[in-house]
Amino acid sequence: MRSYRFVSLFALTLASGPSPAWAFIDPPYIAPVQPGAGDAISVNVYRGDCDVLDIGIVPPAIEEHNGHITALFTGIHEDDPEWCIYSTGTETVLIGTFPPGSYTLEVDRRYMSTFGTWIQETLGIIPFTVLAAPSQQPIAAPTLSSAGLGVLGLTLLVAVFRDLRKRLA
Image 1 (cartoon, rainbow, N blue to C red):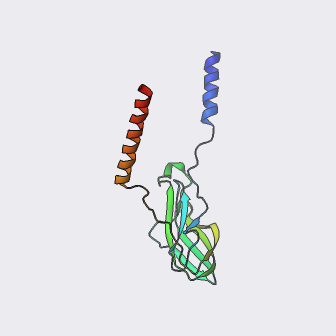
Image 2 (cartoon, rainbow, N blue to C red; image 1 turned 120 degrees about the vertical axis):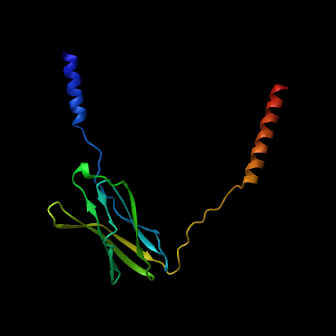
Image 3 (cartoon, rainbow, N blue to C red; image 1 turned 120 degrees about the horizontal axis):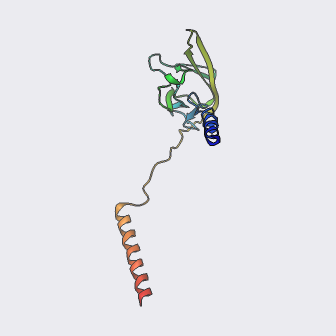
């Protein structure tokens, strides 16, 4: 009888423990990190199952005044985990290209509450500088072709056979 109570108490303790976070939004970040003149700048936001940053029906409102850029997204937020049907992932939205200078990007989102009122919140403020020259993006360069891989494999095979021959002799 005592072990049944212990198992019941242990199960109750585990059941009342923390559950995984469904509703979360990480701070936004821009890509490329150091943009140059003419580079397309986009904002990236990693979010959970209960949030959508941009629903696609209403395009994001992007305004720029004296180096201060505001991006307002109309999205969705669910408070009830039963309605958290959106996938976890990163949303990427193009902000635009800007001339050289220092800028501040304010990323805001708004969503409608359960009671029909708009809730607006700031997700993050990102200061960045656009350089005069376009940024150099890394280019993937192969380090070993298929022919080089074949020669490497053959060389290793010969070395193994030579080593085996020496050990057996």
